[in-house]
Length: 391
Image 1 (cartoon, rainbow, N blue to C red):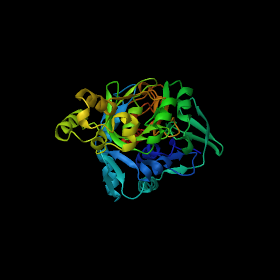
Image 2 (image 1 turned 180 degrees about the vertical axis):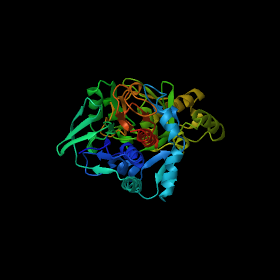
Image 3 (image 1 turned 60 degrees about the horizontal axis):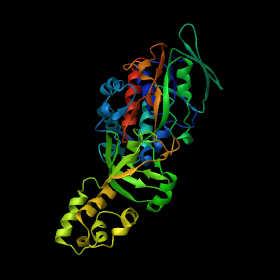
Image 4 (image 1 turned 60 degrees about the vertical axis):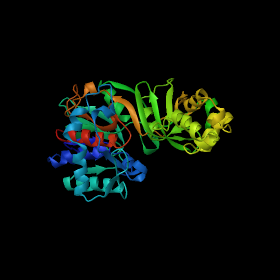
């Protein structure tokens, strides 16, 4: 069978690219080994799909080439996708920090993409595993599957990264890049929970389930959102965000309740209510289990019996907590993959490989990783759109 464009991977980026290419009149074939399209879309955001963010900005993406994402993000913006969602009458809401979710279900986004694919006459083949790709002398590609061979002029790799292997993630896209001599940056899990050191696990396991606002720092990066104590380590938005910047062996500085000047509160309360115990004051701000673990030996003391220096040390225990994680939970629970196909080998305008005409890479397989909160879906929409204009 012959198609003008073959796209491998029926996720967010692949579907967007297929729709845009087919709208230009191109004959498009979309292949995926899975049993349905958009699996990661369907499970994202707790089943409601955090499909973009009001505050998309190139500075909120990680890449060895930080300028690469600017072109696609500026030409197909969050506002373009939001208008598309509105045109399909999909109800949505802002949850926090510009994050947009479907009111009802992530199925609304997948159904929108499927409807647009049908309108544009995209052919979708599921349960189709690609065995081999060969480039012919005339720059056409032969894509070999168990069902037969497919010939195309433009080949788009939208196969994603390594995150959540239970959803079918694989290194397929990286292998294709390497087959054609394109550099692939080492990969690692991003937006992922961090795990305890063995000694810390024994100490902190009793806090499992506690969530609290915090500021989490590593190097010159910090995020102010909630952290969540788990039996394996730390999770929650602030931890997921910092995980993309944290390197093995680095120490995190965690400030619980960062908006609160705890030392000042304790000193002022000592003046106004000296007979109050430390526990009575701190329990207005922190869970009892957390206090008993961090500063148990002083909790029954009245404030009058504690010096200002001791109060500052108490505040430091809670607001200058230093922690060296053991590692991450890995790709099993990671939302994204850091690293991937080298941006310097790809046109930022078209997503085409500079040394292999007709070969394109879009979405998570590329070395572009966004923050938590809809940034990675917007990269999928934008990079897919950019390739769809030229394939």
